[in-house]
Amino acid sequence: MSGVEAPQSHLATAAPLPSDGQHTDMPLPGMRSTALPVNVRRARRQRLETSVLVALDALAIVGGGLLAYWLRYVVQLDFGRELFFYQPLERFGRLILLLLGTTLALLWLKGSYQQPRNAAWLGQLGTLASSTLTAVGLSIILTFLYRPNQFSSRLIFIYAAVLIFGLLALGRLLIVSWRRWQWRAGRDLERVLVVGGTGLGREVMASLSDSAATGYCLVGYVADPPDPDAPAPRFTATTSAPHLGPLAALPMEVARQGIDHIIVALPFWQHKALPTVVLMCTQLGIDFQVVPDFYELSFDRVTIQELRGTPLIGLRENRIKGANYWLKRILDVTLVLLTLPLWGLLALLISVAIKLTSRGPILYTQTRIGRHGHPFEFLKFRTMVVNADELKAELLAQNDGSGPMFKMKHDPRVTPIGRVLRKYSLDEIPQFLNVLRGDISLVGPRPAIPEEVFQYETWHRRRLEVTPGITGLWQATGRSDTSFDEMVRLDIYYAEHWSLWLDVRILLATIPSVLSGRGAY
Image (cartoon, rainbow, N blue to C red; front, side, top):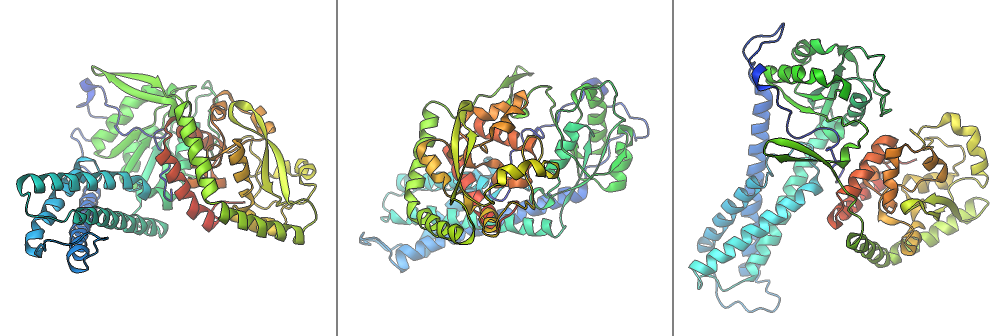
């Protein structure tokens, strides 16, 4: 995602499933008895990328320390605090070296150099901030514990913390931007093969379709012919990825296609083939991940713990309730009131434009379904002709949305000014009034109309457990291009992993999506 990384807990587990220990040395038909070497090219690339990242971080830390020294002792930016003691740069260099070693060690221990290549920039800021503050705190303790008279200026530590964090964040932003640019140009993509071609496998392939966001190039999938007695798939995603053959063709296709990564997405009724597939991947020496298919369960609800080596599967709870609900409500009202001068002026200008360019009311109200299934009047600027609802029945055959959601990329009911408002989401400004009334939140699931809710499957109704929102994970990551099932799973993930910081990240990540008009119609 741009800004916010789309959650992948429902797609693949971080650790591959182990194969049965008594069969790990058994050669498979058509394969060599000894394991093939690990993908050397990929390993070298990972080492190079990690080295470059460490070097950039080191430059940022040293540069931040030097800038802090320059501000305090050369510019003498002291905010009224008199400088009683001048510290020579040569002596201050010891503190910079201490900060360098401590910060790099903390970043390594916190897994900052082991993150996936497509990790979102905003998602990395927490690790950078905590590592920087901890390193500066340790430096303060060591400095004033062992050399209490060496430094008399405390401001320099504040400058160092702010500047080091800022430069580290800037370096990560450059890395993320460079990778996205490379991926958009079709370079440096990891070639991925999916094992499984049912609804589950197709859902994974649909999630991999955006190479510019994921850094993956979907080569195709291998799957045995469908079982006529198998249950109907729960997912409805479609894919244009080619079918490369049955499961037995996996080793040959990995070598022929130059595969870097494998995602195993077998349905639950084919899990008897999982040990064989895992053994194939292990003997090929290739990285792989396994998608868990817990039938009749939403993946985002599952938590996995371990009891003396035995995995225990539990269900997550909705976190937006009780005190968390009121914290979220306070954040909503505060942000809406603080930005009132901006959106209020925009609303006035848009109202005049709508009145001058088309016949009908300025606002469009529609009944939507809110938290716990309660209906409310949803406000938007009118972007369609007055009789748009009556014309909808004639356009149902041209629906571009998936599931019960109705969407059209080229809706003839939209007015010229309405197309501009929709492209940049300006038609949603009146929804700030809904936020103040408590009907919706700034961040949450898309509020559905009653006709859509009537078509929900049982697991879809979990999105009604929380207050709907103006924006959400679905909009920050894919907007209208997201399939309905994927949208629901993102909503469930949001409800079960909510935090104030997550809301802030989603709001920040939505800004570039809105400004670019990506996926809006």
